[in-house]
Structure formats: C-alpha cells, structure tokens
Length: 474
Image (cartoon, rainbow, N blue to C red; front, side, top):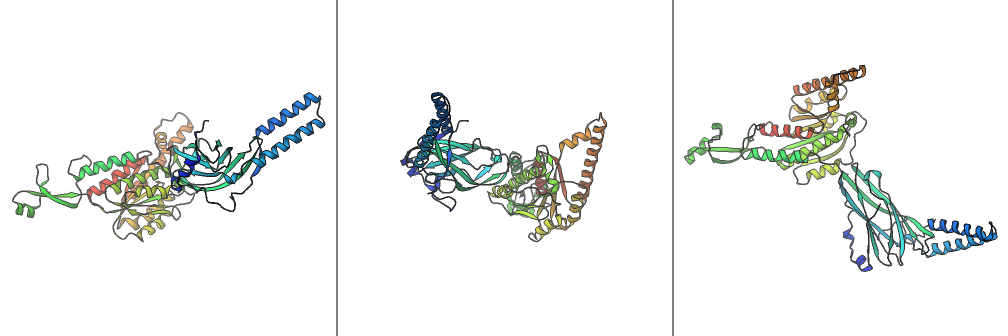
C-alpha cells in the first residue's frame, strides 16, 4: 500500500503553528512516561539478520565449516550493531503529532496526518499508531526518511464503520541507526479524542418536509395540508382562493374592502424525543440494530422541528436516563444531538418508561410534544408503556414511533412450502398481530402511533409531526 509522504525543510517546520493541529496533543508536551531523553529499546532490523546470515554462510564456505572464525565475525557484527544503536537518534528527540478533525461522520472518509520533526541528523523513522479497527484506517504504520532538522508528513485515510468515542493514546516510534542494523524504539503518549457521529440518512426527507411546510405557510394548497396553522401572522387583502371564515370583518369595515387573517404554524413550541435504549432496541432490523433506525428518525425530526422554529431536545433512556440534550432551536442543535448520542448504545435491560416520563414531567409543565421512539412489543415493554403513557397524555401530545421489520412482514405473507416455513409464517403473523393490538391500545390512550418499516420511519415521524402542527393540536 502506498502511503503519501511529504518532506519539509527546517524553515517549513518553523512556520507551522500549534493552531495548525486539529484535535491533537502538542509536540512539546511531555509526561513522565514520555521523556525526550528516553534512550529507547534496541530492536534488531531485518538488515542485521541478513548480515549475520550472510557472514555465517561466508565463514562456512571459506573455513569449510563453523569454527573460531564464526565467533570473530559474529563479534564484529555485534560491535557494529552496538555502534549503530549508539549513533541512532533517540526516539524522544523526534517530535510526533497527529492532525485530524476531532469530529468524524460515520461512513465519510477523513484524512489523518502524522507530522514528524526534530531529528538532528537524517534518520529512517517508523511509527505505529494505536488506531481502533472500527476507524477503518488504510494504514496505521508508516516509515519515512526524516531529513536533518526538517520534517515529514505521512497521511492515511480513516473510514469509520462504527459510531462512538475513540481515545487514541500510544504511538510507537522506531528510529534506525546509520547502518540500519539496530533501531531505537519507544512509546510516545499523544492523546487524541475522536468522536464518530451517526449518519443522518434522513436528511433529504427532512429537507423535503421543511420545504413543504414552508409552502403551506405562504398559502399554497397541498393535498396533505389541513390548514395554514392557528397562530396569527398578518392581514392581507381577500383573494378568490381564500375561505370566507378567514375574513376579518372588523378589518374589512375599516378598510372598506375584504380583508382576511393570515395564519401560520405555531412556533417556539417544545418537542422532546425519548429514544429507547433498552433491550428490545438491540435487535437487528436489516443490517443495523433497531436503535440505529430510531436514532436516525430522531435526528431527522430534530432537523425539521428546529428549521420550523420549534425547540427540540432528546432524552435517551433505558432503566435510567442515559443522555439528554435540552430543547433548543439553535442552528447547531442537530450537531449537538449527534455528538451526545454518538456513544450511546442499547443496554440489555428493560426500559423504564415511568422513570423517563417522570423525568420529563418534572421539567416541562407547559404543553409539549413527546416523541417516544421504541419498539411495539406486546409482552413486557408494551405493558409498561401502556401503564405509563396516561401520565403524559393528559397534558401533552404523544407520538409513539417504532420501526417494523420488513423481513417479518415478508414471512407473514409468504406461502409456505415446508413445515419450517409454515411455523415461521405463523410466528411472523402472530408478531404482526401483537403489534397491531398494541398500536390500537396506544391510540386509545390518545397517542399517535407511527409504525413504519426500516427506511421509512423518519419520513412517517416527520409527517405525523407536521400534521399535528397543521391541525393546531399542539
């Protein structure tokens, strides 16, 4: 694998400022485990093994067998190796730092650079970095020839395959001697924290619904629209497309011509997403856990709500509250939610809906929209959710969002040809029937239920939110 390497002169090295490094430890910082005067462990190189083997073969051919000559030759090679180790620059004299963005996006390639400098004489330097396999680095080892009092830059590309927080600490530096027989090796501690954020697959769907909502606000008709909102915006002159009930008779009498009231969807409302991180959310739907699909839908709703002027927040919970982001309509609210949820994983415990609802009710007295992203399971979690839901439906709007496994739906509709397929189809049909019963029970408590297949949950959740805003129920 070819690794891009660029070398700079000492003048180039002096013009680089610490601010050029992003998310890295500065080259001048040291700890007791990382002293600049550290000698480094002696490490034999492949060249030393080749020289010893060649010398042994030569002695055997000349002396027709191994004898005192071999001891003499090996001793000379050993002395040369000691000399090489003494002359090799110390690893502590080679400054190494990483340059990489501290925030990565899952599935988006990101460049990582190692910048080496500081050797007093030309040296061949090898580095090995402590990069987690999930970061998908094309290479975590590199070897460069470092010019005297100059610098060199090595680049690799990261392809993250799993979200979360990664603390990269140890970086091993190996400096070869001038003869290339022995190298000095020492570990350098350069702590770098990387955060891999979840992908926002629902961004296009969210942007589409934001544009549609804005079209409704300016009065253009839509098949899905139920009105222009209930919050007064301004007065304007009547047109043939306006409804008579929107005429403001007092303004009409003052102006002497028909005037209508223009409304818009309410703003500055509160939307709180409760993301279930319990046992049932760890199950796979397609190639990803159910939790990942629910999180993508929550991020998509955050985009829609904040772009339309509402305050949106997130609470991740299982048996207790795991993470939370206060509701806000800041432009970077989606980024804040992504960074908070990036290292939240579903736990193999039962979800405590009552504790999560109590956490919200203690903080939100005014009417708000609570979105519960969970799974519709009749036994266990479903019973707990039904028991806790009346605590919030009396004073707040509630949407229960769940992702349905398309594979289970396919099994239920499949015409079985074997006994095994018949049993599987029966189990799938029973599972879907339980989901429908639980959905009806949740709707009976006043909640809106969105049960959509994987890949469509974000769109269905955004549509339910827009319908509630357009009808003025919030």
